[in-house]
Image: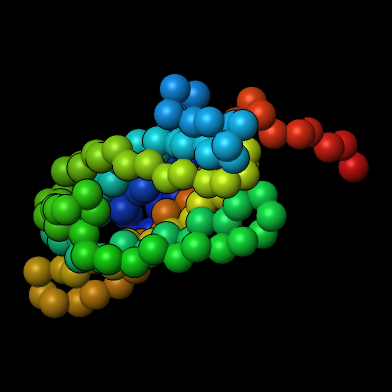
Length: 130
């Protein structure tokens, strides 16, 4: 698992390679990732937007932005948490994802919370020792 905290909001991510949805012979590799967002601070916040940077093993970058997560814009009161599962395909057997969520306090202040960089690894990647 990967975890990062910004202003008392902790984002934890657990990626899982999906062998049954992948087709290595066709250069199609799929991962699911489970995200938990915990509000450990004193402010109520609403998640407004997401931004993902997905880099495959060849260094190709795909950026994804949009409103909310999985069609929702959850509000997190102090002590609340929100969890969701999403996924991503790649044409390489490994990659990395990193991102951020834009949130807004009830007072109208907007700020970004970091999503930790996490590795997308499959059993089909070639390991190289340096």
